[in-house]
Length: 113
Image 1: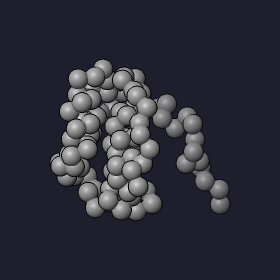
Image 2: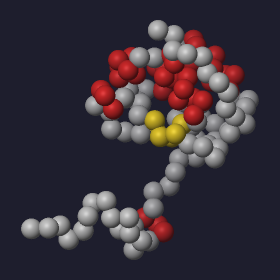
Image 3: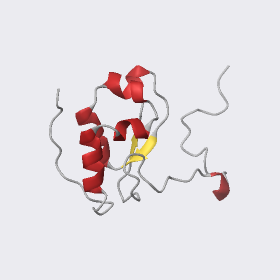
Image 4: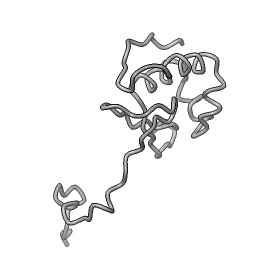
């Protein structure tokens, strides 16, 4: 028996009310700055390690996390932002980027592995 509605139906949300649409978070998960035009939905626990939750981040913040931590380390931290901020490199980055515009982006160093 065929499905009545495809789970990939592009028109399924048209009959929803405006109140039901989930709001986008206004602040970055790592640095706490307001979000700019570009938002990355980041998995704090990598998908390869069973992570399902996503959090909004600036692209530069996500690139910094990926450059400084392995997937195993990110899995151990999970959703604990304070644990990530205890790392001196991440704390230095967050203190530096706090004064920047929300849409600020800069080239990042390669992974330190």
